[in-house]
Amino acid sequence: DCDLVQACPNYLKMRAVKAVAGKLALAVRCDHINVESGRQRTADVGRKFKEELRTKFGKWEEPDKAQVVKALPKPDLTTKKRRGGKRIRRLKERFEETELMKQANKRAFSVEAGEYGDDAMGITLGMLDTKEGGAMRNTTEKRKMRQANTKASR
Image 1 (cartoon, one colour):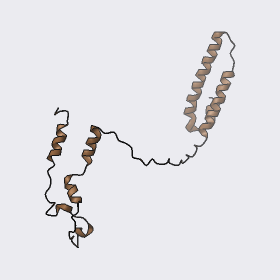
Image 2: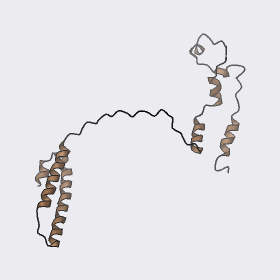
Image 3: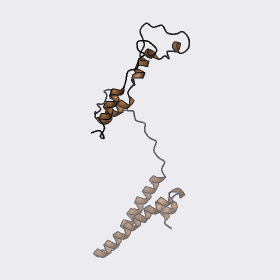
Image 4: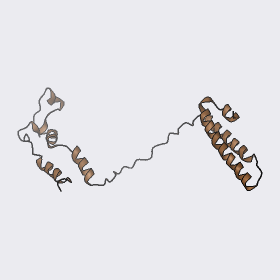
């Protein structure tokens, strides 16, 4: 039955009821303290709370302000120093290029490429196609090193 709540639009009424209830509880406490201390009850606190609620409800009904688009700060062109350690080293090992891919990406010097098909588009097996680079290197040494550094093997 509060006139403040009745003046609010429907979508804000529940918030308004909660705000009024909170201020009402504070006003009752102020009155109780005044009576306990022997002072007379006054409506000053209640009027002050009512004005606070009016201004608050007015702000709720205002449309939101448009966001200001701020310019991005000047980028720092230096690369960040990453701390090393086991976790970063493992991450780098997981995403590093394999020996097979390294050989496929290498190009032989002065070798005639085919005129049609994938050779003309640059899609080849690189050094894996040639006699010199066709042998794949064993990568077992690196795997052994990875296994030796685990907690279980210590």
